Length: 294
Ligand code: G1P
Image (tube, rainbow, N blue to C red; front, side, top):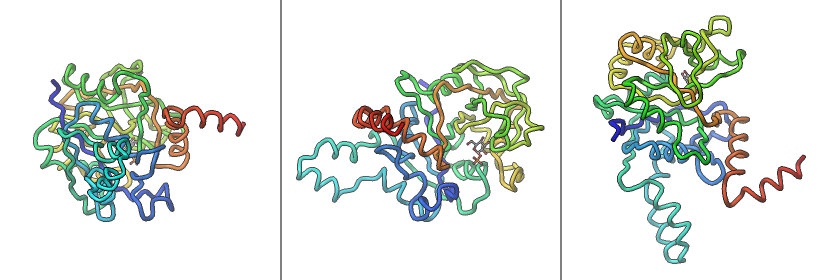
């Protein structure tokens, strides 16, 4: 059994890239087919063996916590009407052995700061970090990428950072890894010797960008406590990882699935198309519709 049982999910972002849709609802509550993005992400974590989910949130985003809470009136009405399938889909989102907690990030000081807000709850245990903008689609795969990362963390005693190749003109949007020119095969990990947050294309050590899934030892929390603001004036998780790798093995895990960045309009649309074509209730008719659009 893995020792990795906790997940930190930062959800305090303002969602500026998907305005006006995210003006009055959290961007994490926007649906991809029939579930909000955050539910897809939490189901991924549960599949990877996570039992305690820590949302790092802020005022105005309580719809996320409500979504995973019970809704007595709705459940009662569905029960009276014998709508058992729908009732099951709203009342059993989270298995009974999984807990969701939340902490507040009272200032927008960056991803590293958000993760550190969960330090007391993580409490000296390894944990995963999941950036909820990014959906990782592992359709029809027996294990998802996060599961494979947790296994690699245990087997190699090395932090795992999910990476994928991105075009050169996009490296400035990501944390970028230096793996001494090695590019792992999909599903494999390779040691990282340095990391840099949002480099200029000409300074990037490779095209292997960090894409929103991390499996980390508890030590990273101590390093984050001392991390100074970096790129964009924010406390960057990437900078703390660049310190961690000087004293602990840190590996780049090359994903096998496909990612969708639901924090921007195009990625959100693409996710809905891909997931719509995979959902048993919509797949066939939706495929037909898309064909007709040419
Ligand atoms: C964050 C991280 C960055 C990572 C990216 C993945 O950046 O700081 O290292 O590559 O997520 O989506 P953000 O997109 O929040 O600016």
